[in-house]
Length: 107
Length: 126
Image (cartoon, rainbow over all chains, first blue to last red; front, side, top):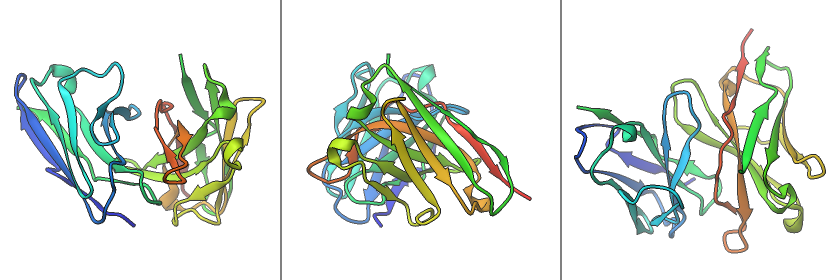
């Protein structure tokens, strides 16, 4: 199985800050990586697909990059609604696997 | 608007069975693969399995943790996919989500997991 190591596991930031989350795959995942946002009691929402493509309707302050085994996710100019948990997920090789999540909290 | 809604969750004893439904609206259901994920209380996300569209054979794939115990089927005429869970274990306790996706001729799997339903809680306990 491809292990996805996501860091940090938690992060404190202020409105207006920029933050970056990384996801390291234990083997090549090509470009097949998603980033999701999840708020408590809600289903995850797809933000970024194929590592760097912004899903339609998602604000442009969200971005992703990377390929192979190293991926990054950045939020520029944090807004109050961005405080949530974020997950990466590879869908290149079965079983599809997720990072353990990054909880983004307000400082 | 594309919408998926899970139903059928509840409280069940270990060893028993339960069937979840994923009902879709706003899409031509048969054109899509349907994937199930789950999330144990306070834990991360886990892929459970998927069913391909009929155009890709309607075949299924499962995580090792549920293989042989869970099956997925679909009724395209009703726009419903089912997750049949048997021999349930306490570690199957989770919120179960379904998502729409596309079959991939490149990876031979599924890509695009959006939107997600709100989820249905399954509690396995004696």
